[in-house]
Image (cartoon, rainbow, N blue to C red; front, side, top):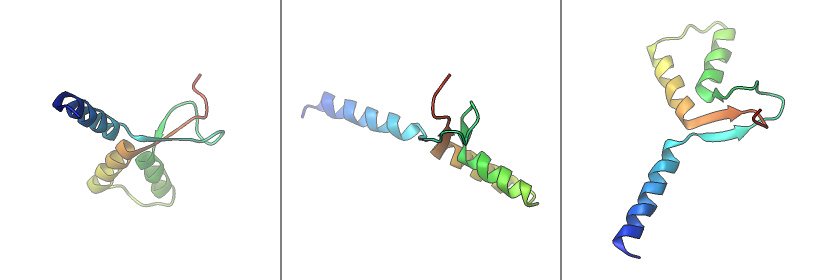
Length: 74
């Protein structure tokens, strides 16, 4: 493998790490993407837990990690 090919492989790996994992759920998600952090934030707010600054940071991190998408894009 040449140096140029290894650089291209490394760039592809970095690009794939920057994109969140996508989970497609038919019927459970509206027409918009919903981050995992937003799901946790809604669930904890629904049971009465007040969010703090740490909660916002956690939600942002989880949103970058995992996204729930509708089954089909319209």
